[in-house]
Image 1 (cartoon, rainbow, N blue to C red):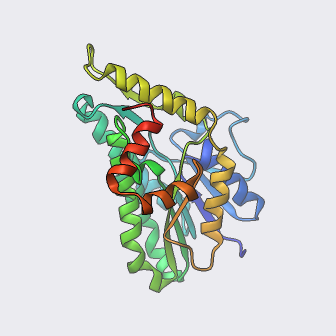
Image 2 (cartoon, rainbow, N blue to C red):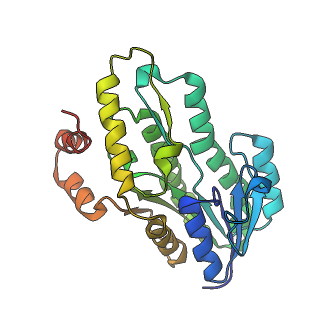
Amino acid sequence: MTQRTALITGASSGIGGAVAAALVARGHRVLGTSRKPELLDEAARLPGVEYLPLDLTDEASILACAEAAGPVDILVNNAGESQLGALEELPMDALRRLFELNVFGAVRLTQLLLPGMRERRHGRVVMVGSMLASFPLAFRSSYVASKAALKGFGLAARRELTPYGVYVSTVEPGSIRTGISERRTRYQAPGSPYAAEYGTVAAKLDANEAIGIPAEKVAHTILTAIGAQRPKAFYAVGSNAPLVFTLRRLLSHGAAERLVTRKHGLS
């Protein structure tokens, strides 16, 4: 591959860190973002990665990051928050923060970097989503909606951008072993009537992620999208993705919903 400049959001660990390391190994210039890169210790700093500060909930921070990055050929919108809670009990400020981080911040950063890609007639944008956007799950409504929104932006924008050599792809990972369970924000009201089912789903999610695929496997799929001459609109990886997406096409909507529900311990 020709040497390119890549910007990876949330590059201090997990999927973002694995993608950044893989791109450095392939000879690219890699910019990684962290909310406070000055606080990263040496063990968290990947060799060859230049770190930029970025708070995706702050417009000024997004503008400053795009300006500091300069011309970017590859953008991987990876940073995000995982959230768990019954719809009835989700605080609106938490919901707004989730969409600012998972959707609006990623879209705004993409907007700022697209003109340069279009003018150079080359660009790759990867939205890191979640298989839950294709297989919604109870108590994950806010997270599902944010990832579905990100996927929608990517799918719809492809037709606008491909004539200019700029391709937008969405990568949907299944359960990933990255420690995301410990970082997930969780909301449950005192005396919640949903407590039993909420606990069942939370335990299943944690258990699935403990045995999930490593971040490097997701990174491999993202690099496939980046390196393709004509990247596909959609990629899925992990959680038996080829099988479950085949079943989704074959089964009715209700049957697919029951399959996902039962997999997570709900009746």
